[in-house]
Length: 68
Image 1 (tube, rainbow, N blue to C red):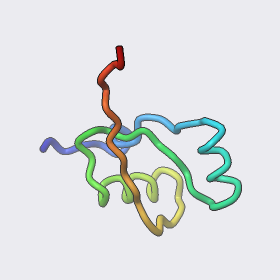
Image 2 (image 1 turned 30 degrees about the vertical axis):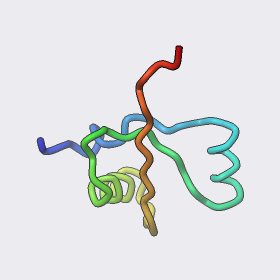
Image 3 (image 1 turned 90 degrees about the horizontal axis):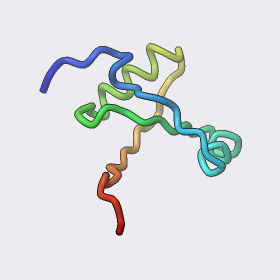
């Protein structure tokens, strides 16, 4: 696996109705991250970029397959 820079790990924040509700109610934030990033890398990137303490990282791999 190649070394990823902090700003390569966090691709973009996900802003949807559901993710906004998570942020408001449960103080959870949703980001699209690089496919090869590990949980420790994601945690380090978020803590460094946003200067916040990360308690837990959950990941979910979405399929890129188009439903037809």
